[in-house]
Every structure is written in structure tokens, then in C-alpha cells.
Image (cartoon, rainbow, N blue to C red; front, side):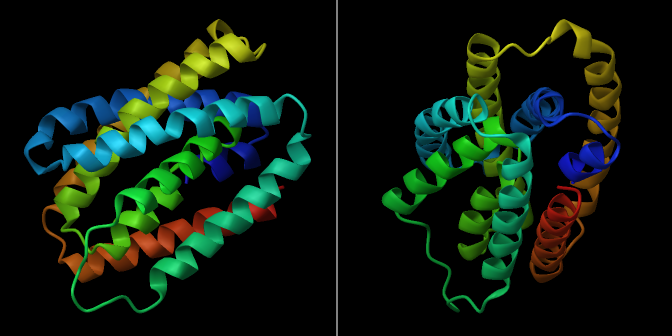
Length: 215
């Protein structure tokens, strides 16, 4: 949700990407430690490793493709992810295959460095497996730590973004993010799985629509 809101506030896409990645990294380190017992580490490792080539390709893309083309495309794809999540799933949850997990990691890594909308593809993958809320959050957190580190390193070396100039915004957003993160975990512990899933789908679709509308 942060990406469309920051774009609506007039913050550039490149700056939005960096701030979101830093905030995601800082907040998810704490969540990863807090919920480490709920993480499926092999799945997170596959997602993280697969995100590297996608993130590299994203850096190459933003060097050549104008921003006005990236935002509407990201918004439309995010909405499609939300719609796919809402489709009826198998009654018996099945863990995603290694191939599906790797492909999702590549796509998410690409979105990470181009728009910072790296969540929806992984959310879709995990949602179809119908994980319990804490397992869902834990796997996302572990993955975000990896892909945020990779994406920031690639952006630092492959673009001309003035990272020191973004420090005040990064600090302010990180403080808010940490506080909201703890509130979110508390809520997730009390939500039934079906309510949690519906809330996630709604947020994904809203984020996509707002991103598309602000393009």
C-alpha cells in the first residue's frame, strides 16, 4: 500500500522503491526473528535465490524504460494477482512446487527493483497454499529480508539514486513501519484464516488499483 500512497504524494518512483525496500528490510528482520519457528526455510531460500536474476533485470529495465510505462503495468499486474487469489482454490491445500516457487521469485525480484511491488506474486503463491496467518507472514518476512538486501545492493551499484538524500524520509517511514508492523502481528494472531485471506486479497487489489490510477 505504501507505493501508491507515496506516488500520490508526488515522490518519484525510484525514491519510492528505495524507501520501501529499506523499510521492508528493517521491519521484516524483526518479524523474521520473532516468527522464525513458523518459517518454511527451503521455500524462502528458493524464492530468495530466484529473485536475484529478476532484480538484476529490473535494474536494467529502469535504466531504459520510462517511469510512466512501469507504474500502470505494475498496477494492472497487481490487480490480476488479487483477482487470481480470489478464485476458488483446491479444498486440500498443497505446497507450491519448486518450479512455481522459483518462477514467482524471479517475477517478484523484477517488481522489487522496478516498483517495489514485490509482494503480490509471493502473496498469490502462498495464498493458494492456504497457509495459516503466522506461517504466511513468516515466509513473506524471510523472503523480504533476502530480496530487499539484493535489490538495494543492485540499485546502489546500478543506478544514480542519491541514497543519502533519502535518509530523513527513510528514518521517518521506518519508525512508522516498525510500530504498524507490531500492531499487524497482534491482529494476525487473532484473525481466523479465512478473514485474514480476504483482508490480504482486498489490500492487494486496492494497491493495484491505486497504483494504476496514479500512473
